[in-house]
Length: 137
Image (cartoon, rainbow, N blue to C red; front, side, top):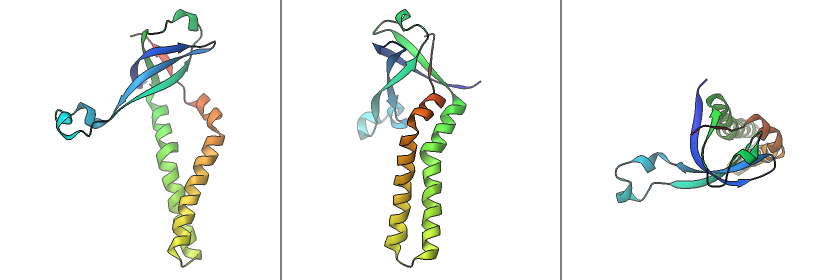
């Protein structure tokens, strides 16, 4: 089983899990010339991880969070590929019915916005499908 692993630090402990802060780097962040071009991007993200015994961890402890690679690919599909498909279908579908570019262009953008709204409605269900777990450092 291939996995995606990030190292992080526990920032908070709750009743059912812990909050882990990770540093997400862009591809430019590892470039040797990053100090010259100022393009490197680094973001801190907080990820909530459900654990069986949150009291076994301490704030400030270094941990690795792990997700199955397959789930990461599924997340990329739902976040990037599916909205693109929705936009293309709406664009071509509306272009056959209307002659005005503003209508089918705006309709495609509206279809993407509607897709993300529906995705937000199902966010709790999706968060159960895409889960992280803690691994030894």
